[in-house]
Image (cartoon, rainbow over all chains, first blue to last red; front, side, top):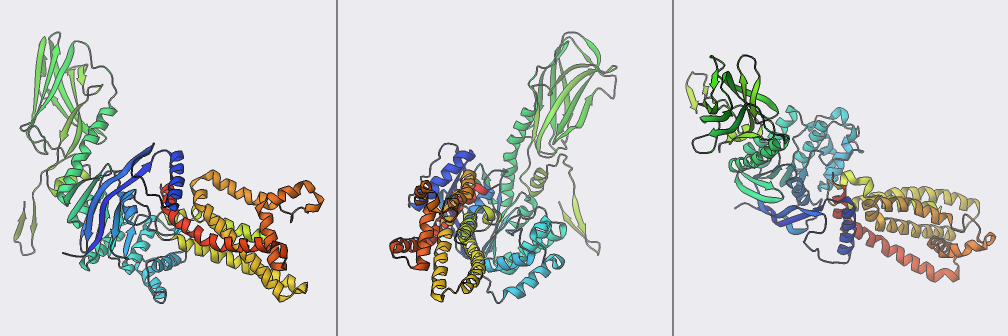
Amino acid sequence: MSRLLLDVKNLSKRYCRDPKRAAGYAMRDILGDLCGRTVDPSLRAGEFWALRDVDFQVRAGEVVGLIGHNGAGKSTLVKIIGGVLRPTAGRVAVHTDRAVVMDHQGGLNPVQTGRENVANQLALYGTPSMEIPRAIDDIIAYAELEDFADATVGTYSLGMRLRLSLAIYSQVRPDILIVDEALNGGDIGFQNKFWRFLNEHVDHGGAILMASHELFLIQSMCARCLLIHEGRMHSEGSADEVIYTYTRLASPRDKQFVARSEPAASASGGAVRIEAVDIDVADGTIYPDDPVTVRVRCHSSEAIHPVLCGIEIGGGGVFPLASLIGGYDGPGYSLQSGSNEFTCRVDRLPLAAGTYQVRVTIVTRDSGIVLASTGRDGDAVTLEVHNRLDPESNMAAYRNNLVHIAARWEQSSVSGELAGRP
Amino acid sequence: MMAQTFLETFYTQRTIFSANRALLKRQRGTVEALILAGLYDNLLGFGIKAAILAGFMIACHTTVSTFVLGLLGIGIIFLLGSGLGLCLAPFSAIKADVDKILTFLPWLLFGLTPIFAPAASAPGLSRLYDANPFTWLFDAVRAVAFGHAQTSVSTLVLCMVSLCLFPCAALTCRIARPHVVERFLD
C-alpha cells in the first residue's frame, strides 16, 4: 500500500451565523486557547456545524475528488487541511511538508509584483535561497507572463493569476496538491496546461485532492470520490457512483424550487375542472427514453365540442420546452357532461434527468378559450426524470441538459476498419 | 522621537492581521513572517531617526555614551510598542470598534504627557500625567539616557516587561491566527 499523505479523522468545524456573536466567540476562544482550556465541541447559540465527523485518507498516487453542493463544506474542509482554519474537533494529519493548496486566487499577494510573489511563494515552500533567482525566470516563462512579471498581481486578470500560481506549484513539486475550484476563470490554454500538469503530477507519484463542480474533470481524473452533503460525508466510492448520488441529491432541491416558484392560488373554475393528472410509467421511476403515459381526468358540467387537450412541459428556466396537443391534427375531442379522460402516450421520453413542470390545459378548438388548466396555479404537477448510473447520464445531469438524444457512436480508422462502441 | 517610535511600532504590529487579510486567509504560517516584516520596516524608520538624532547630538556636543544610552532607551520603546501592538492585534482585527479606539487612544495619551504641556504650568494636569502610563514610560527612557537614580527600578521593570512582552505577544498572535482568519472569510 502506498504512503499515507493525508489522514482526516472525525473532523468537525462549527461556524456562527451571527456576526456579533461570532466576534465574541472568537475573542473568548483566543483567551481560552491562551489559558490552555480545551475546546468544548458543542454548538453555542447561533452556531451550526459546517463540517461534522468527516473521515477520509489520501495516499500517494491517488486522485480523490471532493464534490458537494454549494455550502456543503468543501472549502471549509480544504481550508482546514491547508492549515488556514483550525478544526473544532477531530484532527488532520498531513504526513508531508510539501502540501499545497491551490485556490482560484492562487494564494498570491495582490500588492506585490509577479516576480516578488514567486520569490515569496518559493521561500515559503522551502526552496533554497540560492535557487530562487533562477527558478523565478523559469516560472515566469512557464506562466508566459514575461511582459507582466514586474507588474503588481492586483493588476492581473484571474486567468493570469491562475497561470502564475500553476507555474509556481509546478516548480514546488508538492507531494499532495489540494485544488479548490482552481480551474474556474482559466482559458482553454490554461485548462489544457493544468490538465497536463495534474497528469504528470500523478504519474510522478503525487496525490491530488480535488474539490470541484467540474464533474467532467472529477470523472476523468479521480478514481475515488467523496461527497460532502450538509457538512457530513454522505458517500465515498468510485467517481461514477458518487456523482450519480450527487445528482440524485440535487433532484429534491430542484423539486422544492419548482414547488416554491408556483404561487398558491386556486385552480381554475367554470364548466370544466381538471381533477387529476397522472403520469404512468412501468416501474414507477422515469428514466430518459422510457415510455410514459399521461392521463388527464376532468369533469365537465356540459358537453363541449370541439376541444383540445394540451400538455406543456418545461424546466431549467425554459417553458414550454415541449408542447403536446391532443386533437390538433384532427377535428378535436368532444367533452361529455360528467367525467372525461385524455390519454397521451409517449413511446420514448426525450428528456434528460431533472425535474420538469407539467401544465395541462383544455381549450376550445376554434376560439382557443381556456376551459381549464392545471400545473400553473398552486397545484404544480412535476415530472421527475432520473439519471441512469452511467458516466454519460451523470454528465448530462451535471450540465443541466434538458433533452436526451439517444445516439450510437463509432470510430473509423484510416484503413476503413470500424471500431464499434455502443 | 519617542512618541513617533512608539506609535509607528504599535501601529505596524497592531494591524498585521487586518492589513494582510488576503494573504492570511490563503496561507498558513505567515504570521511570524509578517511580524518580522513589520519589525524590519520599523527598524528602517528607527535607523533613519537614529541618524538624525546622531546629527543633533554631535551638534550639541553630546558624549557617545549618552547617545548609546539614548538609543537603548528608544530601543525599549521600540520593543514595548511592538509588543503592545501584537497583543492587541487579534482583538483589533476581530472588532472594528476596538480598532478605532486603538487608533485614537495612543494619540490622546501622548497628548497628556509633560512633553506637550509642561507639568509646572498646569498643576491640575500633573495628576493626569501621573496616571498616564506613557509619562512613566518616557520618564523611564529618559532615566536610561541620563542615569537618574530615582527611576532606575521602574526602568529595570520597563526593560523586563518590554523584553518579555514581545515574544509573548507574538505567541498570542500565532494562537489567535485561525480564530481571526475565520472572521475574515468571505
